[in-house]
Length: 451
Image (cartoon, rainbow, N blue to C red):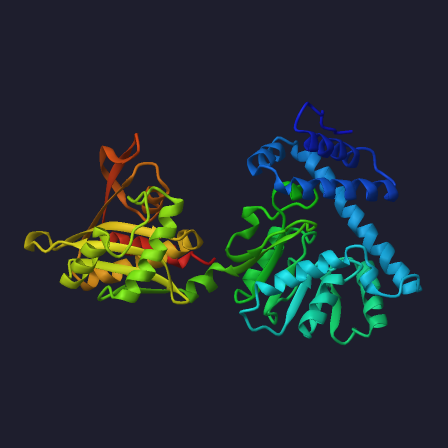
């Protein structure tokens, strides 16, 4: 039996320790398991108000094997809960689905999930991992009035669900199919909701993306101590997707949800354009984006927010009008998400080269996909202006250095005191690339981008 030795720690976490040991220990009868699970949930909810760093350190210190045992027993508890309620409902022991012990929790969850896709039009919904009691599908139908298909891998659970739907009169609006989420045809669906217990997570998401990269995906997950009850979605399982919105579990909730769109869909939805001038509207959007990045990252030359009177903005506006600076903006839904600036020499013998002086990206668009699109626009601009060589300087060891290395830029020098934040000094590196070679490298990367 794998258990955790309880040491002297913060008292509420001692209680969590004891419950973990109980749930992960000898297989419990359902009544005892139900009592222990409910107590663990209550402890987790109460800890929401405690220091997040302390809770994170506690969770990270747990043996992953112990956490898996708790996850597995929580899954067993929820499956038994659903099965028992389904049988009682079918036999007439309970008259309403609202008597399901977790009914209010799921209604609150699905209401929040629908709120994060409210801006989108959709007709066809698929719920993967519906279990023996399709409460999510029922509430999705009741709250939207739309048809809902379900996918369940166990024939027995699907049969119970279909019997419940027939008794409720929903059999025409909600269908439960038996199949594998890694191979099921998802082409016709606008929205796919993946249950937390639906596995393998990575295989299911890969299947959705490869068959239908236009679908919105609601991926249920968990964070913090709630990972004791539900395994979260590891970052590797989200390959090929960008989380564009989310709902987070609050008190008395266990499940969070990410709204995912494929990276291909995302890059198709953003607009990259070179600005001919920096008008008032463009200034405001640029400053808003910059200040958001500045607030999260001191690697861009600024330590405090800027406004339209800042010399950076005034010089940028002047130099764009003179044609010696070129500003590329990344825009989505009338909001700037990033910028790239190149400085083109106005001296005759240097006009064959330019310096990349600024690259700023909001966290939502960082990644190789958007970087490849930016590089594509950069190459187009260089060829139009007959720029043959590009140079840049970045902080050594930064993510930006790694990005430009990925794009093929080479280091040709070092600067020991490139930047300084308070008393901390940072080294820098000089990098360069000829445009023709950069173009060849980009074409190869674009060919493999969505394989």
